[in-house]
Length: 394
Ligand code: MLT
Image (cartoon, rainbow, N blue to C red; front, side):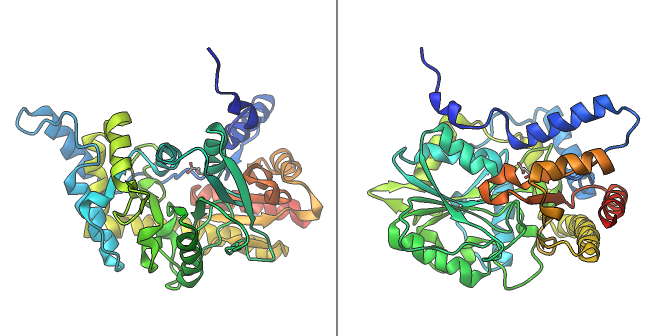
């Protein structure tokens, strides 16, 4: 027996596991210190009341013979897919029901989707990038090339026709930089992908943070995307499902190559390896896209956006450059005084007991940058930003 030796090519631990381990070590050595966490993008507000109501009702369904549910459809219950379809149509995107696949989250699907692609494909990822795109491809032994996201291009790399790629990852609004593409910019990526016969894996997990109408909420708002894109979305950041687990992936029927249909392959993959998201969770998720549910989750998003404003305000006051924070829950800042990302991580932890995420963990171009999340409570965000301000003003 041989293990998968490509695991030698990834870091020993996942970025957020590393941050958690270092924080835990510091906490154990300093039990008297109150640590404020603005590291991993985990939500802190409870689920919306409409969602809770629906979850309770679904639990009751499971208690009666007439309404009990066993295995559900592999692609998700129709009652949820209908709501997702209506949500898309509210901003002008028409989808067929069998193009929507419900899953336990965008992270899982972003990794799992690689099952339908050949190992020979060349993968283009922006740098810095959500580590899942890179690690899952390294585990499978695929060749990865990078598109530089830098201060110079506003952390929004554009296609370079001298570069040939087969699988292209785009995350907008971006994790970690918070930068987001306009529809015109995305159109350039769609044209590039179609010209190469490539596929775009579009991570829209943060679309609900968009308030600027010029920015794309979905790649399917762009002409031509149906022949080259798969979109991944999640209830995690939209509606606080990080612990409840539910997401959805859109695979258009026009995405075909050499007689293969991505939509059919994805259904085949899911029905072989996945038995669906629990009925109770899907009932909860369906409540998100009711009028009342949307009102409630939008209030939660406004709360997080206010946190982002608080953080951005402190950075402005300190004269620290950053991106994000407006159409995104992340603030991507330049480490002060030329510190490296991990140096700044240690400096903040030791002197202000504030935890963030070192930019270097997202790739080579992330070195010298640092990410703060707006998903904390307002109290924690306020206190953390006050501590940062006091420390860096010195
Ligand atoms: C993050 O902090 O980048 C996210 O929480 C990661 C994720 O969504 O998996």
